[in-house]
Image 1 (cartoon, rainbow, N blue to C red):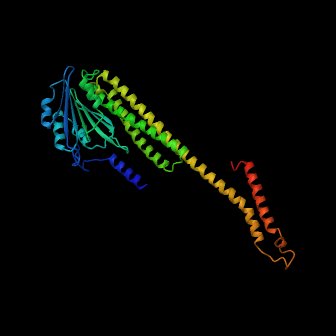
Image 2: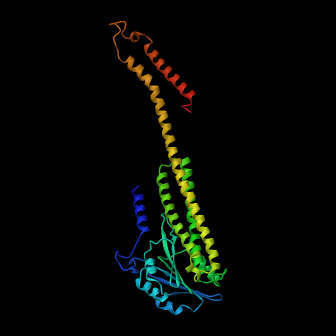
Length: 368
């Protein structure tokens, strides 16, 4: 139990990790000194060409921009405030948005600034505990800029589509690339949510067959994670809705891309529905577990009650003949003590009483 409490405290701390000191000016950027140092990778492309290359420093980013119709700049690591400041200058990003980039406790959202769209989403991190990583996305008229906390993401299928020029991704605008990234994030969550369903099926089987004792704590942990996931996807769906409906998005999000965003929003709704179903399943399994425990307790109490009920008259008989009144002093003092078959008679009487009671209990169905 102490390990579970420690894990719970770790998860709660991970949910809110603000780097900016209290009272700091709005837009201040304070990075984590232990965070991964930024690695910059640029993928610039057009309908007929594509160039993918790592960049050793932020100084080369500005010279590569606008060489091709669209440039995707991916930053892996948030451990250098100077790099983030310089990228903000190059792309003319709002300081408040950059502050949200380094404060990686943000929930999914969509915000519009002058000439850019700022998106926050969260991707799952592989592991036993429910952990997520913040992905920050800036969308401009000719670029997409992404920030992630550490190496590893779910965007490789998008990169492969760009390299192989599959679909319309290289001929569409940066808004479609941003949609593709968001869609990859949502798709990455489906196996995670399905895993909860498999885990709940295993717990159901254990409760039914093995009468596991730690089911309640496991169900509580799963339900807690599902609540967090539901809150996350409600915000994700809200952000997608803002991208589809807000008037400010007309210049950055084209009408043809909004149709795809609607499909992504539908996938988000499917995940929310699955989460709701699994949360209800958690409650049902907890009630089923408690009913199983209650049934086993009642069964034990029934057996003990039957045993105690049988021994009540037997205790009476043993107590009665255990008084040992001398029959030679008075004929009224337990003449049975002088009988030759007194002891077998007492045992037979007690056995008969116990047998009659067991037969009565059996007919009543209390022993079945």
